[in-house]
Structures are given as structure tokens and as C-alpha cells.
Image (cartoon, rainbow, N blue to C red; front, side, top):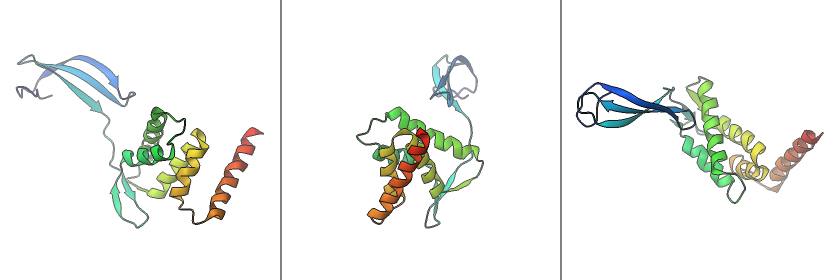
Length: 156
């Protein structure tokens, strides 16, 4: 690892520990030439994901977009920030594990709704109403009935 202070190419690792919930490793290093200490992070290299939008345009996957939608759906609900971040991370991990370089946006939306349904039903309905673009009260009520039917089945 190149020293940021002097540019020397060799350093020794003084300390290693997991970071970001074991998603990366934080390493404290010391330059073998100038003895300056610096920190590096090691992460697993992943394939870049491309999202195929409804209009067939393609854009790079951005976990923050998922998180933003989740945050809006969970506004004024008892869902912690950590729970919301975990949902976004889990969805990204799931997509990475599929080993598909391209993923349709509707698949991402369905994954978000699936996770929100288990965490907070109101947040789920909020997200679904935007994602599914309910045109009228009948389609909204249909979604609520489906949710209620699923809830009854879980209780039995």
C-alpha cells in the first residue's frame, strides 16, 4: 500500500478490525520509510449492477435511492434508521448474489415492498401506493384487502 505522506510502497499492518457491520475491514498501517500511520479499508469487489428502468433506460444501481424511498415510506413510523439501512443493504446483497449484471427496477420495488411488509404495514402501503401508482381508491382498497388477507393467514 502506497504511503499517502511520502509515497513509499511498503507498509506494515498494525491493527485490523471489521468495519460497517463486517462489510469491510479497517486496517491501521505504518509506512516502513517515514513511519507515518494511515488507515485503509478493504472491501469485497462486486460486479457493478445496472438498473433497467420502466422506459428501458439503464442507470447504475444506487443503494441510496432505495434508502430514500424507504425513509419516505417510514416517515413518522416506529422504524429505526438502522432497520431502514439494513433493508437497503440486504436488498443490495440479494441482488449482488444473483450474479446478474442487470436488474429491472420493478424487481427492486417488489423486494422493497416484501421487506417493508414484514417491518411496518403502513410503510408498506405508503411505498406500494407510490411504486404501483394507484390510479384510484379501488386499486388502493384491493391492495389493502390483499394485505389484510395475508395478515389473517399468518394468525392461523
